[in-house]
Image (cartoon, rainbow, N blue to C red; front, side):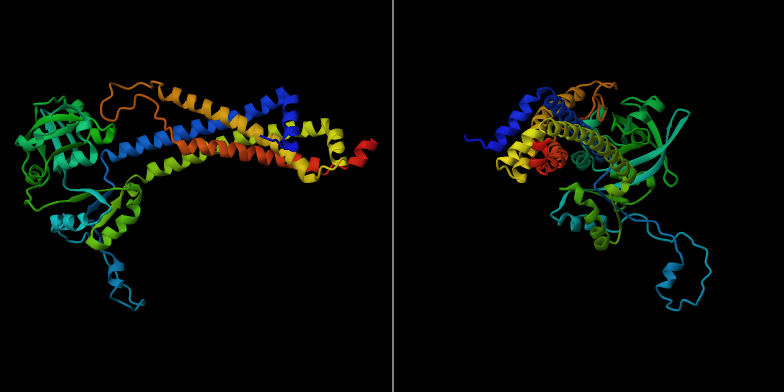
Length: 419
């Protein structure tokens, strides 16, 4: 393949300064490899914590929101702003739970964006074992549907999940509850609410979601048992949990469900707002670090090309004297920057992958790998990150190489040759 004269000159300049070329390429390599490592770490940890949040949190939770009466409600009827209303806001008297929950479920299931949906009865309870008491919540669920949505079986420490459907007055408790109350599978525990009669329930299993607050407070039973705890009828449902085919669509779908059903629809972004804020802050910090690294690499390339111009100033003047245009001179020096960027980018991708892979095998402690326990650093091997790294590396070198190249193109051959 025939190579242009400009390319030959650019390669000759690079090969004649092997040490400086290698240093510049190593600067780009370090920046690219750090970019890949940081992005892999950030996406890996974000994916892990999102997965952990989805172990217990649905994409959308539909529930009846308790409202407080205020003057804004009267303002809808009174158009005269001069009328002043004095009131003492009180809790509105309203029916607890969702009216006709299974009709609402059938209506929502028709939406093609919905992947899974299940009802739930939530009850605030007091667990009692001997003389020890513990506050918590019981989730009355269809455990088969719950397992499909949240992989409860994968979080089981001991026991058989299916026993929740077959054993009367049975309960599946979190590992934190079991530890605090010294309970094991087969033991009995008294569960009571403020409205119903306390019930002695048998522990059929223990789970560990990996979320401490959940494991220390939450237990599962079937819907009928939860309704019995609260002294409610079989139509009583407090929540409807919905998973979508694309969980990123939850913030858009939730307002639609509020309009259709008239109930509050809380999407997972709202439920985990603190976590999402932490993700954004961490992304800003990591991207700033990578940006600084690539900027330092760019200055290194800028300095090396500047030195090359000073050393080759007479040769540049001769090139222009024999007919090379300013654009050709820019091409020669810009190609040098691009070759340095490509060389450093390819090596950087390789080292970035090796670094990420090595950290993914780094043991960071924890117990046996039971439901949600983090034993190794979560790293992501997302291909677009590698492409982005090479592109950013090359763009950095082009930006760093353009200004010295433009400076070289403006050399006056007559002045330089005369000395």
